[in-house]
Length: 630
Image (tube, rainbow, N blue to C red; front, side, top):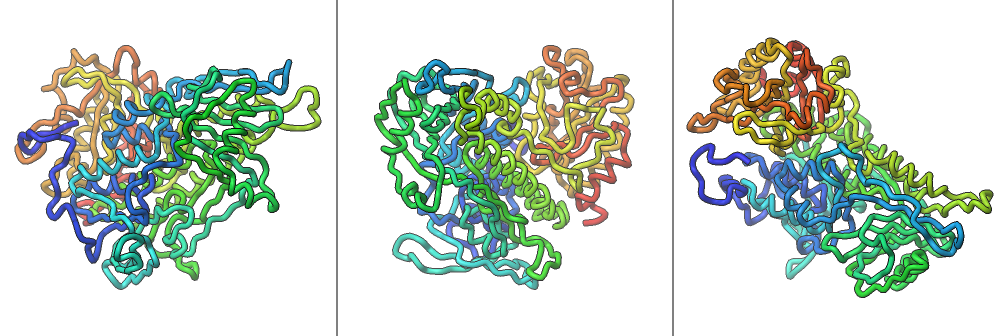
């Protein structure tokens, strides 16, 4: 964290100086962005937009206050990476349960009425991320984001007890969206109010009013299989109670056991069997006692004595998806600038078995947030917003396809070697599938297709470990100025800036020429009187050991003067860590070097030679309003 840039401060550096006019107490007549719903997608989006002092954002929530008990709990490695960019990973990791290993139990061959452990694997493949897969209550996760919003320049907080009645659009206005809101609580319950907005984002769940307003519908089918879920404090002699466990019984159903944070709490996903038209109403009325009894039967011969149920629910697995995540198409099919967006459960729903619903929803918000920021700050054209639906809808479709297969395997009975004709899933196959699916469950399987924000793979061989279209996979480096060991990716914050990571060539000549070129090129991208790195942040990785590098020999662009005093930023240049060489770890061409272009949401946009000035210009220039085009 850098601070003191514009003067010495004695207060908490994690609290940004308030923007002029913040905090807003009364609901204004007009805003830049209105976010509907304070779930994971809405709060990540709000946290991102709250970083921009010039953008007026409000978030409304139909509940009377913050979430107290959430249903989601799994936090993928990729999500922890994102939380680190917001400065929240240390808090999250300190409180969460770390999923280190997963165990598999199936019927005992000698006594099929009992279960025995048949497999134990590492939960996340070594090297997939520098962060672990963790478990934390959704309400706590949202509390971190709410606190971040409150500490931002905007001092942003949700407006509770307000639900959307309608959204209308009139493109003749500078705030073309009019949202009708109704109060849901208190003496003024039922009272309606209106607010105008440039953009509206519906993060209001599977029954989204915003989705309905733009004519989108969730399409798909239920899997006709019910699961009960409960968070419980229990005493048991089951030996793997503090490990993630997939348990298949011969005839009593299946169980997914997830330890929770705090050392004592455990979540049970209990198989309640097939759902038919005849039993659907009865399944919906199931009480916690039925979930406990089913879990006890599945765990036989081990005992389970539940002392307290903190929360429980019964749900039917279903996977549904909308065709678009925006209103870029009019009812008659013609194209227009998107103004209304949907995210999270408002546009895709799936089972809890893959542990990705909350994670993918938050990535929706992260994808859209920096794009709205760039457009509203005047740095990019509004056409950038078309990429949100184009990128995120296919990601949701891929997740649903994976979720269908994984959920079906989790619900299927284990094969009986004595009666193979009865069907079912081989427990060994279930374990093997879990290992193969590790990239999905870690949240790092997203691979954006070629498009305006994703370049061609022409030069991918220069950096084989930074796959274009996937998230920037961090690795250890040494920061030269202060000899600090750190992860290269941790230099990037959720501040809406693009990153250029320049890996120097063996001779250094191409690297020096790149710095000289960028010194002029970046100034044309950057608004007048702004710091040279305010839009695109250049970071360099050298091959020379850090003790052999002289700061005075570095190009001035790598020691930029910033802020009102023209202070020098010494944190732009790194070198390889001898114990974990990033050039080897990420397949960087040592002789030629490489330039890695990374988007504000941490995805690799392009890999280029250091001297590919024309290709860099052709790719990035259309994304920005330069001084000559503004």
